Structures are given as structure tokens and as C-alpha cells.
Length: 143
Image 1 (cartoon, rainbow, N blue to C red):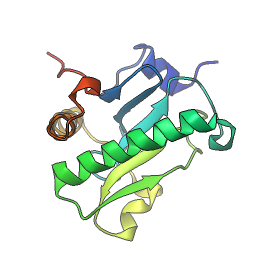
Image 2: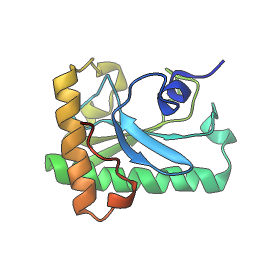
Image 3: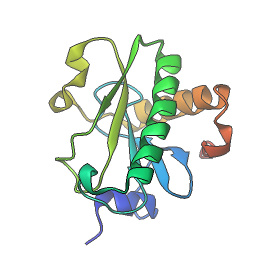
Image 4: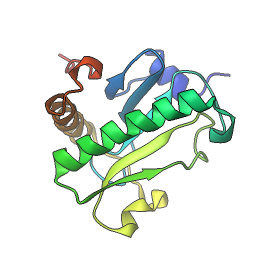
């Protein structure tokens, strides 16, 4: 059975995409720990991070770095948080978010965001990534 992330990637469920390429996508978490909380996800449905091909893991990590630069820029955050939890969805995903303190790393504190908050965060992060030179992989704003 396809994971919820595979359904988002396939367009069967909505997602606010921040990054797209042939192997990896990134979209906002619907339950962020902070505005701009992004999930970096390989298109291939791989459950455990230890099982991913090292080159694909390196690609995901590199994109997570770009997203981290974007969230720091967009929210003027001193740090970008990076976590691999892998409990909620059996599809590898890297959490990237602006961080101001260690409390921000507690995924159990995540709360659902409304559509307006998510739309605003997506626009803000896409703009920051374009300013950082990653426009080729940043999807257009939905109309």
C-alpha cells in the first residue's frame, strides 16, 4: 500500500511543495513545530533511513541543507533544525525547520496549521529559496 507521502507526491493528496526534482521532493508539514517546517522526501518509497542507497541519502541531505538555508533566511532564525524521526509515516523523510531553541526539536509538540498559515509559509520559503539561487527546483506559486 502506498504511503501518505507517495500519495502526496503522486498528487492524490494535497501538498505545499517547496522543492521538486527527479528523485526528491520537499513539502510543508501540515503539523509544523515552527512555520516553514518542511519534509524532504525521496520519491522512492523507502521506509528506514538505514536502507536508502547512500547516494540518494546524500541527495536528500544536500536538499535538506538548501531548505535549511531557506528557513533561516525566511524566518531570520539562528539555526535550522534537522531530524529524522521515521515513526509517523513509513516513508523516509527529513524534517527541516527554523529553530530558536532546543524545545523546537520536540516533534511531539507539533500542531496542525491552518491553510492560510501554510500558504503564507510556503510562499515565504519558496521566495527565500529563489533568492538563494535554487529557483530551478522551486515550484511555481499555485494560482
